[in-house]
Length: 291
Image (cartoon, rainbow, N blue to C red; front, side, top):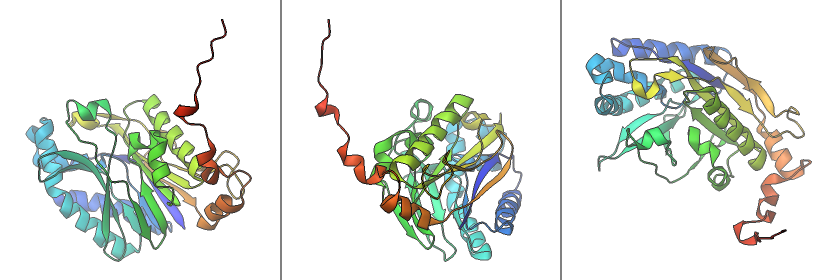
């Protein structure tokens, strides 16, 4: 299959038609290059807050409500584009307000046959916790799709190995991201590459990029697209299948054969996935004074 990872700049919209035109352009471009799976970034959906006007954008609670209120309409647009172009899409994540009033960071995975699943972010960053009051929640999921088994770690989640380990049946790990500094980008990228190594899978990182002062939640973003595998037979020695250019908008593409994932899991030069349980745990640590 061919995978496309977005480096996605946010846009101010006056009408829903403006958003529809932008998303259609992005999807059409990737599909035109033969992509089968398109990955959009964390909090890319926040640009939908601009449909509410400047006053809504200036108020974090109102901006959150605006995005949550139109998310199902956005999901339908994604499903329509999936059907039109015959692609799977991980839509840009955004805040979803649940029935109990709590806010979660939710990414939706859409298929060409009209199905939609979602993964909520589990571990919140400090800013998500306060002032945003976004709540981390499970469960972690593995989606069985026509492309293969897919799991999602939203940004910070990719920095915690036990989460991807719980999703180890997945052959593709999607990592939508939003970071406001270069070190944040590298934390997520290193996490994505480490998860690809440990679980002998392909990790796909997508980022929002650029300045967007209209919204405090995403006012500055740094990143690029990247597609990574385990450094083993059938993959590059670096593990980097493809990477974009920092802060340059557009798609990063890579051809991925899941038979290569299955090969390294069964016959690779190392067996990180199978040997995971052999590593020492906290209960095996001894204090050894040498003074």
